[in-house]
Image (cartoon, helix red, strand yellow):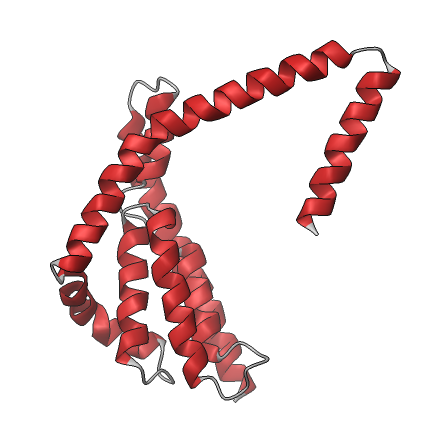
Length: 191
């Protein structure tokens, strides 16, 4: 569906520029946008490579397993129906990656967690309670160090790119708390 929306927006823009005789504006914007997109990727790449490399080292050195066992008591309360320790391990890895602001590094762990939870799911056509709770946790996850936002601010010349840390921590903590509270209330009301 989103592809259709983007296609319509681009088509309307091109048709409008042709009708108003401003085709050169479209051509210039295409070149400028492509150039700025590549520059942004090149500015963000070192930060993402560094943190994703650290996550890989943490995974290979079993640091993520240790983190998983550390937060296992919390996760077992959030996911009472989940029996797979492997799924909880992937959830913990996803949470760890999200905590340092690396959604791109968290995604593979999230997909693996969903696969493991689907194995336990009795109704394969619907998301289980654990899957829904994980989606809430993943979407609103607490971010201790918003590395991607800091990298973006740094790339755009911010004087103090890390000043976003406290407000990000507060906002993500509140969103996680409220999201998980609503999830809990809905789960309780269905029983």
